[in-house]
Amino acid sequence: MSALLDIELDSRAVQTEPEIPVASVSGQKIFIETYGCQMNVSDTELMLGILKQSGYTFAPRPEDADVIVLNTCAIREHAEERIRGRLGQLRRLKYQRPDLIMGVSGCMAKHVSESLMNDAPYVDLVVGPDSYRRLPELIAEARGDSALDVRLDRGEYYMDIDPLREEGSNAWITIMRGCDKFCTFCIVPYVRGRERSVPAREIVRQARAAANAGFREVTLLGQTVNSYRDSTCDFADLLSMIARIDGISRIRFTSPHPSDFSEKFIETMAREKKICRFIHLPVQSGSDRVLKAMKRSYTVEEYLALVDDLRNAIPDLCLSTDIIAGFSGETQTDFEATLALMAQVRYDSAFMFKYSARKGTVAFREMPDTVPEEEKAQRLETIIAQQNRISGEINATYIGRTLEVLVQGDARKGEGLAVGKSDGFKTVVFPREGVANNALTDVEITQTTLRTLTGRKVQ
Ligand code: SAH
Ligand code: SF4
Ligand code: F3S
Image 1 (cartoon, rainbow, N blue to C red):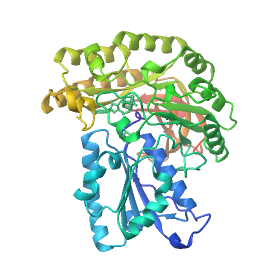
Image 2: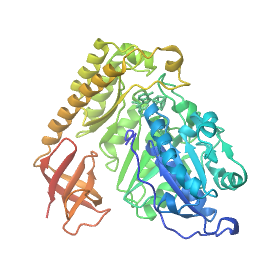
Image 3: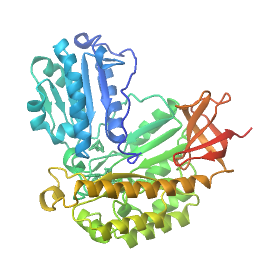
Image 4: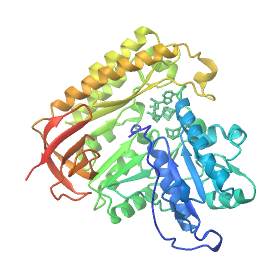
């Protein structure tokens, strides 16, 4: 996850009947394609929930839809380029069927709202992350003329809406929206607005509903998820409350910020067995100079002390991270410091990116993008090669161990193989031998690669 971030999901294909058919949209079909991080995945489920209430049904393919929405990401230039490419592909559908509504939602919708409709005049609908409640109304508006609403609203928590969750074992629950950290490279605070915590009672309501619907795992989402606080509780209290819900076997969260951990949180995580032994702990760089320029609010020493505290309190903890290669002003020495930090921490896995200057951020305005593209690519390659070696070495130590696996589905490769996740978020593949999806089963690991552990069910 972020960190699970930067995943791209397949288009959603959910076939359901509307609960309350509304005459004007009866039979209208919507298709939403999701880009970006889990917050967007969760927002797509929210939009589908809102649209279902309004009488929409869901199209399995864009070709079958009356309304197409791309739920977009703006984190790097590449993310926006891909969406422009996808819009270009879908344009032919609009020419074939002028009644088709083409929409863009999410972070890119907010980031480039002004130019989007000019650059792609076939886009009828632009909707930002705080305007999804108005989606049915905006679609209706777009049938006449174009419709745009990208206002940010610090009072929008999307209370009392039931998301239409993708089937599976995990339910995403957004517990915070926005971000107040303003790291100098990052577009998120500008496109998602101010940080706000969803009231705990709403989160507990959603977690209970997910458990009743058969989800065994919940993943709590926020850009700095561990700075969660409402008037009654903090993040540690929230985790304890969710751990008391019957039917939920596993709790995950992403992404915590290294500066927002408390002793109380660490004690809670050590105590509550339902909280998975995995933390995505984005570091970004191993150089204090670069961390300062990024406004990350921790030093390498503080970060390493945190890793020690977490590992001492939580045996078997697995860690992943995010790294940016070639940030403005990053020297060869800074880059080597990142390699050294990664070698010292030995993350189980990492998401690694080339720095992409984002219009609107402090770094874009004030810090020249000094590292040439080829140099960034070279540094990224070196970082990836080192991480791959470490991931492979760590995974090899799992041979002979037995892990409890939450089964997610069929493995992509191999007849009769199932795939699931361990507590530490390792991908585990094994011969299914009758084990159902969403079951917890013990698997003894016999073989490993840098991405996958393979094993057999313990009889
Ligand atoms: N809130 C999370 C990160 C969200 S964005 C956190 O603070 O950890 C996910 C990741 O994308 C970031 O951790 C960072 O590594 C990467 N990222 C964000 N902006 C970027 C940019 N302008 N260029 C390259 N990578 C970026
Ligand atoms: Fe972006 Fe920093 Fe907020 Fe993460 S904490 S979303 S990197 S501004
Ligand atoms: Fe997520 Fe991309 Fe927005 S990473 S918060 S979808 S900019």
